Length: 125
Image 1 (cartoon, rainbow, N blue to C red):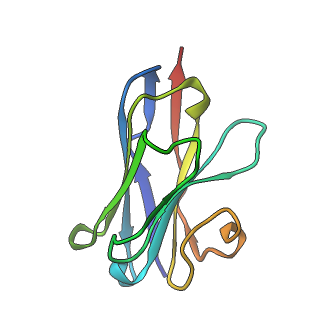
Image 2 (cartoon, rainbow, N blue to C red):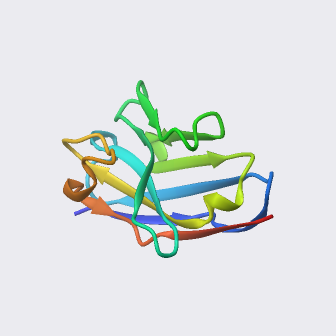
Image 3 (spheres, rainbow, N blue to C red):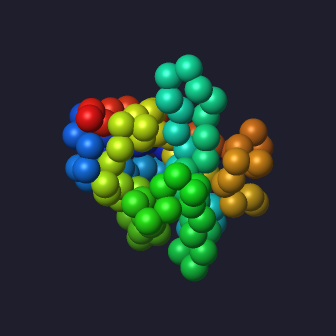
C-alpha cells in the first residue's frame, strides 16, 4: 500500500511560481509511474503531467506545457511539480497519483492505483 502526501500549495499571484511536492511511503517508489492531476471548483479532475519510473519520459497537458515541469527523486521518494508563470486558471486542488503498471494520463485516471489527498493552489489576478 502506497501513501501519497502532497504539499507546497498556497496562494500566489499571477506570474508567480510554486513548487508542489508529493512524498510517498510504502511500496517501492521507483517502481511507480507518477502523475499530477488537478480539479477546479465545479469542474472535473484533469490531467496535468506525468513521469515514468526513471524520469526518461514526461508528459504534459497542453495547458501547462512550457510552464510546469514534473520531476522525481527516487532516492527521496518524492515527486515534484515546478509551476512558473501561474495563471488564475491554474487555481485548483492538485493531486498526485501513482501506478505500477500505467503511466498516468487523462484516459487512465480511473484506473490509477493510488492518490494523495490534494493540495490547494489559488492564483489571484
